[in-house]
Every structure is written in C-alpha cells, then in structure tokens.
Image (cartoon, rainbow, N blue to C red; front, side, top):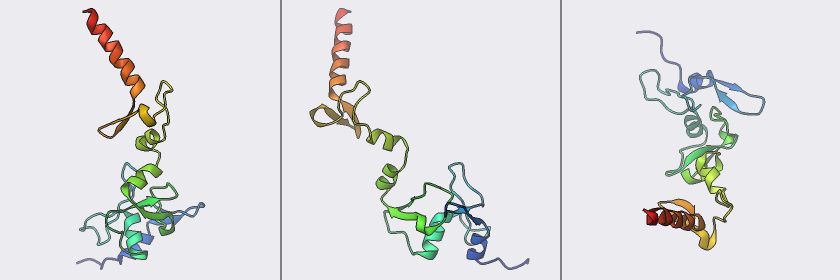
Length: 146
C-alpha cells in the first residue's frame, strides 16, 4: 500500500523558497517557459500551474475569462500578492513580447507616423499607408517596363 500522501499544501510549500525580492519561488519542476508544474492530488492526477493553484487556494477562483499576471515578472513566483487577474489582452500588453513591442511603435521603419490617415489595419496588423503607396508605385514601374 505505501504511506499516505501528504496534503497538497504541505507538498506545495516544500517546493518553494522565499527570494530576497519578496517572490515566493517555485523550486519544483518548471517547463521550458519557466512556469512551474504541480500535481495537487499527487502523482496520478493532472498537472496544475503552481501560481494558479496558490491563487485559488489562498484567494479564491480566478474569474472566468481572466488570467493571472505576474506583477513581479517572475514566472516561477507563486506569491499571491504578486499575482493579479487580468484579461489576456492586458496581460500581453503588460509583457515585453512582440505584441507589446509592436503596439508601442509610433512610426514605421521609414519614420512615417503610424496614426491618423497614414495608418492602415489589415487582419489586425498595423501598416504605413505612405510606405504601401511607395511599394505599389515601385512595383508598377518594375512591371510596366516588362
């Protein structure tokens, strides 16, 4: 039979450490993206993200349609005071990934403004109307000659 399983919260806390910056870091297994994995019900149960488990254990359910944002930017942190439920869009724009970098751009690579009448949006991607016109004129000149 073996020994009885330890309660989830005991196993959870045995895999954390308190960092100098106030983060409670997950020391158990982490995936390649830096997020931890935890099996609240023991070996034979499904995996959970430790930060999500901690939030639900100490605070309550994560509201539908929201995700947890690590305010400390540490994906291994399970400190519930460092977690905030936000929309996926808000979480993306708070990060430093490509979506955030592109959203912060105010001008195209050629220095034209990405706003007002010069802004085009095609399939959710912003573009520069001036550059598009220049590309079209260049293409027309190249194809006209042949």
